[in-house]
Image 1: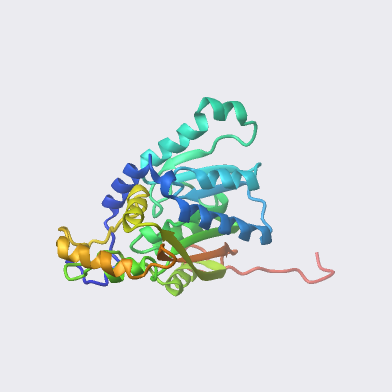
Image 2: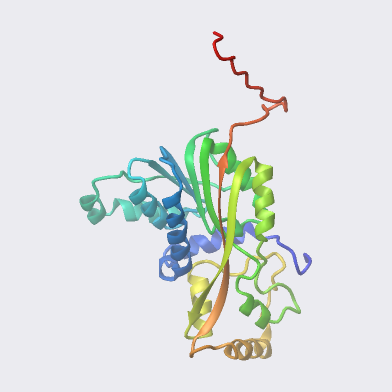
Length: 297
């Protein structure tokens, strides 16, 4: 079994859970929708008119609709590795009422693919968007390298992910004698380092703590299950904690109530970075730019 502080995630399990959650994730997407709104607000202060937009980890397509409202002339492409999610997007866009009401923009293109192996050519997009997807990767570096590859020079990456304090109340309450009950999340500074290594320039990142409150512990667990956001650590225990363990966890969580509600922490990391002109070519040689002197042909 991996070490208790392992970041290793079971990718096949994550795909199955998100596939199963395609029909229900909209009921429990409060956090994702709020983070998308905050990401969208950041675009108010960024000058960019993208021709093609890539949404990686598009889920049920809600963010694709938001991006269409801001950039109606841009072609949108949604990518997700859970095919039922893409089927949900297609169904939402191809319904009769949707077709009657929609004039512009056209439906997004959809592709089933992994974030670490995007099926697009170099410099294909002006804007890459990823909302709460990177936290489902054991290592975000390969995905960030793919974002960099498919962005054109001057293209923008906008992303959000979850930090280490996410679900800390649940992590602290659940017994950990037999493995991780809540999987680990990568620190913001490590994400920043990975951005630089991937070739991005001028990364801007910040972190904020959002608190969602629940009437009951079961409501929290239900939302996590419906959205597919349950523990995917390879160090997770395969058995139950037992009645005593769960009773102790519930008692610990009940002791955290404020104004009759159960507060749960989500550490949200947001960032953006640009793809700058390359300083080297593929074989490692430096790119040298020559500028003619004034008055010279």
